[in-house]
Image (cartoon, rainbow, N blue to C red):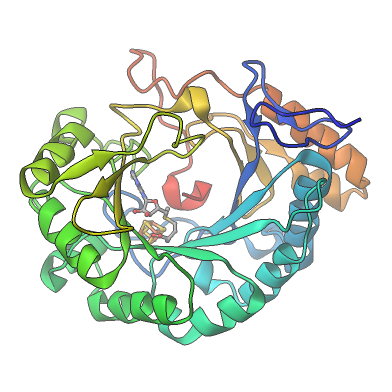
Length: 349
Ligand code: SAM
Ligand code: SF4
């Protein structure tokens, strides 16, 4: 008989990724590169970062093997590819196709998703959909090309819009849009962004800015909070909260927008409304390290094990052990909080 996980689904016989607090990780975030063609101020310094040396980055086959171990031995049910910018990874379609072909322990196809800045998505949305990709999140913080360039330090607003349109046309939907509001730049765009998203059928998700960008760049007092965003939205739209329990392990609190059937808007209050108690994530960096949390200050090396010839069972054991050490919460509010050494682009957002 199979064990039943906290989420009620069949868990692998050998045991899933359960931490000391009983949380079960079923959602895997895989960073495919630490490189990016934008330089968002809240994520990366203007000059970029020292990129991971090529030989330390997992090959396509290594990524696929770790994802397979996650799905077949550890109970992973959803795989999201991210980065850096995952569209910079040449083998992305092949990796997606291999992941999409995997089946969970209970025989269900794994769900696949991509988080991208959208540059070049206009040319690849169709091939990604053909490879089996289910869904895409595209990041767009502003409707104004000048503000977009201020935030991303690149003049590529039109490319993101083209990528979004192509994703919707390829059926990678509902297409989600991730937006970060930055004080003094686009803090007044909550309502315009939602109006635009509703017009286009995109599902908008606001993300509170987290202390994961260039060191010293985050100030709590500058944070555009979930409360502030919700107050602005509620003044312009009739929002109906999703019923309790609908959120599951999802980080976004979501609302239906009355008068727009099927439309939702979400707010991810990672800082002011943390959801650590329901977290179901495990993360793999582009250089093959397991991170139990975005804010973890410790990583466990799977690349070394894999390259030393470890079998699947040994890799699965190391991954389980890594997740047992997951902290109860991110601790941003603790006086002792320390930002992790890696910034968001190098962790994989
Ligand atoms: N390059 C892709 C993109 O921008 O979508 C994928 C990687 S990016 C790190 C993933 C998400 O993290 C994006 O939606 C981005 O806006 C968000 N992000 C980056 N730095 C952040 C920060 N300091 N706080 C909150 N969200 C952040
Ligand atoms: Fe690149 Fe995404 Fe970070 Fe922006 S948020 S710099 S697009 S990795």
